[in-house]
Amino acid sequence: MTRVAVLAGGVGAARFLDGLVRVTQPSDVTAIVNVGDDMEWAGLHISPDLDTVTYTLADLVNPETGWGLRGESRRTLERLSELGGPDWFMIGDLDLATHLYRTHRLSQGDPLSAITRDLTARLGLQCVITPVTDDRLRTVVGTDAGELAFQDYFVRGRAADPVHSLRFEGAESARPAPLVTQALEAADVIVIAPSNPFLSIDPLLSVPGVRELVTSNRDNVVAVSPIIGGQAVKGPAADILSSLGHDVSALGVARIYAELASVFILDEEDSSLASMIESETGMRVVVMPTLMKDVETKMALASGTLKAALDVA
Ligand code: GDP
Ligand code: CA
Figure 1 (cartoon, rainbow, N blue to C red):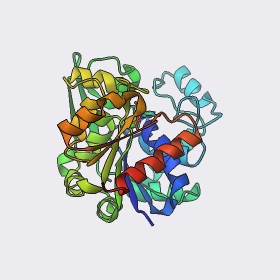
Figure 2: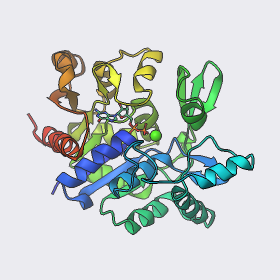
Figure 3: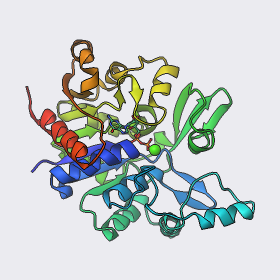
């Protein structure tokens, strides 16, 4: 039995988790998911990363986008647009049910973690998916145009604005959700998923206690690089590395993760960086293919990552 806790954002993390639950006992896996992207939209509470992870593991996700439900229509959104309502955030007709359910339960006073637990149980998932916190946490992005709410930067602005700063509103007073501390303390392996270090992983670490739990278990922590050949597979991770003054490479990511993790999973395309990362960061570097193209490559990355973490050199 290997208990695994995964620090998770959205699409990159969801793909990794999809491999992980196929190579280990799903009930031994806890995904601790970012809620910095959450927002209120047309009166509904939207948790994009929780939904991406949940839909992916339930095999309901739209494979083209990596988020949203497969085979979705958008009639409600079209109608909302005709009415002059907010139509810039892509909400599918069936996806809407998740947001109605979540918002309704929140309005009755239920915590987000309990609602997530019930949703994932309904979908038959055996792993634990929990928001990092039940408290309000919001990523605020500093750009040339001033501070933007996360989805204004990411969806409305198509993540095109250079990011100069990031802050996580509400973090100081947020508490880890009930299963978060327990999962991090009990984990044999903690994985920092191949997620955006700034937009997905940093908000998790900003919740008081989480960073400390990770660093105090550094010997059991493995980080998977989201950067391959100096580029993000998807999204603005490379742009943000650059605009915040980091090296735009897996080395730049490794430097950020050095105090958190003892093992770093580097893509084979970047193998020439391995010895530099090892000598500069003190992490043990393990090179393997990290591009998750299909179920086989996801499973291979997940099992390679676990093996690397458990194989204490
Ligand atoms: P988001 O919240 O949907 O943006 O998702 P994440 O933060 O979890 O994932 C985005 C990050 O995942 C990006 O930096 C991508 O480069 C990385 N990513 C996505 N797919 C892959 C993959 O197949 N392999 C690796 N190594 N990284 C990936
Ligand atoms: Ca996200």
